[in-house]
Length: 219
Image (cartoon, rainbow, N blue to C red; front, side):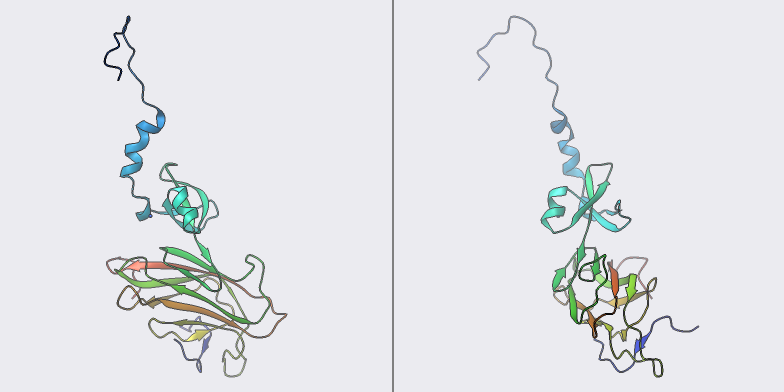
């Protein structure tokens, strides 16, 4: 079966009222709604819950303050409306350590038509992360040259993990797995290199962190 990716074979990959006597019986006090529900909020562990937001993007269920404090955006409720589905998107020059992050081009959802290098640094969300899955929800950059199929112009490079050849062209709908390596302080770096202007480019890469014990790890 032919490889779906277009590779660059020459690239270097890379959460006191006691005294008062009442004259009539005192009615029981009904606790307020917030007091009644407080213990439930304390029990729920939002950080461990995944969710799908109103935008159909994958996110993490947490309280709204944590979401905005971490730079995410609220995309609908989760956990029976006790939390919000927080979606994280990042672009050039940023760093993430969330369970799921979307790496998008500058100006997204508009296309990008300039030259340069756009990097995202991805740290493990916890020590037992073994893999990253990269889903190319959108991936359209300059295609390789037609003869030897080499990515001479635009290129997507993964560095810091297991060696992955650079790819280019149209890869929407494809995905790849990247080994996270050992240790909590060893990030991977995702880079889009673009050369030449007046070329419409779009990318939206979903980065999912996969624990070592997960049954859905890539083989």
